Image (tube, rainbow, N blue to C red):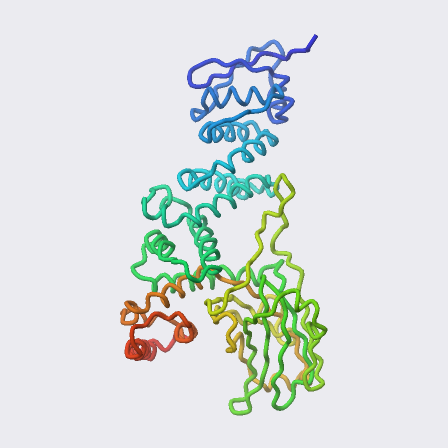
Length: 458
C-alpha cells in the first residue's frame, strides 16, 4: 500500500486545493526543508501568491504525481513556470520553458523577455551564479524573436517595450543590429526609432554620441578588469629605421583581419592599424604563413588568446546557447572597441583605448594606436603588442542609418557631433545616400566649421 504523506491545504484564488507532502517534497527539496519546521500533527495551510491560478497549481500537482503536463496554453504555462520557481522545482522549470519556447511570438515575447531578465538579474544580485541554463536560453530566444519583430513592436507602441530595463533595450538593439548587419539591404529605421524614443534623443547624431560615451565607460572597464584577457598578442623584432610590416591574416569574431605597423620618419611616429579581410577560416587554417609571417627577416608572430570572458552554456538538449558570429558582408560599416597595450612600456590593465569604425573588405586600414618611434630605441626594436578587440553592432547600426539617410541628415545642425573617424567612414561608405556631390561638400563644410570650433573632438 502506498505510503501517503501528510495532506497540505493550499489556498489559491480563495479556493482550497489538497497536495500530498511527500510527493511535493520529492520534487522540491526546498519544500521538504520547509516542512521540517512543522510537527507531523500540525495542520498546514499555505496561501499561494495572488498571481497563482487554480489551473496552474493543478498542473503542478499533476507533475508531482509523475504525470506529463500535456498540451497547455502559454498563459497557464507562464503561471506554472512561476510556481516551479516559487517551489524551486528545477526539473519543472526545464519542462515549462521547453514547452513555452515553441509558443513564443511577437504578441507575447515581451512578457517572457521581462520574466527571464528579472529571474537572471535577481539571481545575479543575490550572488547566485548558478542560474539554470534554461532561463538564459529563454532570455536569448526572446531577444532573438523580439529583435526580428522590432518594426511590429515599435509600430504598436507597446507600453511594455518602453518600460523595459535599459539593459534589455541595449541587448535587444545589439541583437537587432547584429541581424541587420548581415543583411545589408534591410531597413534598421525601427531600431533607431526605438532607441531615440526610449533614450529621449532628438536625432541619430545625439544617439551616436550617447552610444560612444556608453561604450567608452563599459568596454574600457571590460578590457582592463582583473580577469581581462587580450584578444591577441603580436610579437615583433627588428623594428628599426623605416619599417612597414603586416601580421598576415588571422581569424577572430567570425571574421578575417590583418594588422599593420609602420614608422613615419616625417613626424617620428609608429602607427598600428587594422583592416577587415575577405579570407575564410578554412583558407587561413590551411595557410602556412598564418601566425608566423616573415617580413624583411623580422620575427613576426600573432598568438590568439583563449576567450575566457564568456562561460560556455548549453541548453537541456546540449546545444550551445552562444550563437555564431556571421562574417561581415562587403562594404558594411564595422566598429571595433579596442585597447592596445605596449607590453614593454605599460603595466597590465593600461593601454590606449578607442572606438573606431572601418569598411568591411576595404583596402583601407583604420588606426588603433600611434606612438613615438623613439620609444623603440630603448628596447632594441623589439615590441610585444597586446590587443583587445570587440565588435560593436549598435554603434555600427546607428552610423549605417546616418549613411542611409544622409540625404536629409547632411545639413542637420548636430552633424558636428561626428568624430573625424565617423565622418571619414561615412564618406568611404559605398551606400552613402547623398543626392548630389554639392550636398556632401556642404555637409563637410558644416562639419569642419563646427569641428574647428570644438577642437577637443578627435
